[in-house]
Length: 152
Image (cartoon, rainbow, N blue to C red; front, side, top):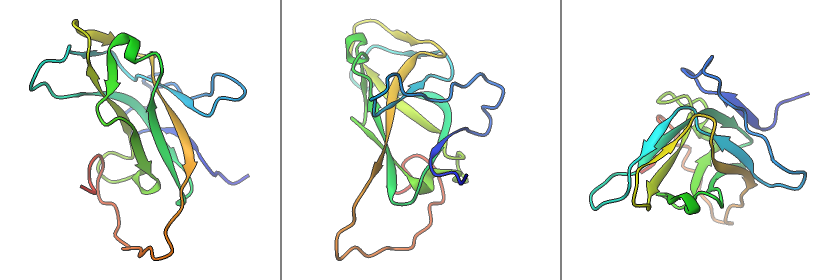
């Protein structure tokens, strides 16, 4: 059977006990993503930068799909909000030369105390999503050459 979409362990994370995402219920749209390592997310103060949380994962899927990286509903209760609101991962992010397609979650902590995310904690969810193009779409034929933020 041909592979269509799924998750793999990103290079450098092999043998690190990375959890392959699963859906929690029969009708769940999202696959739960777990933290790959313990990470402290400092309480917000002016000038603080968001904290990247490693997942140790990469995802493959068809070129007419994207992967939406979404905050879990329980995260804001802990003070955690995704700095970019929602993450969008393109099909050509998989196996890119910069980071092998390793996707991460970027958080601010709106709480008053630092928050420790433990390895294995569910921190986000991802949904595979088809997308549409406009009638006058003009493919640039540009190739992705690197990882996070590489298309500016």
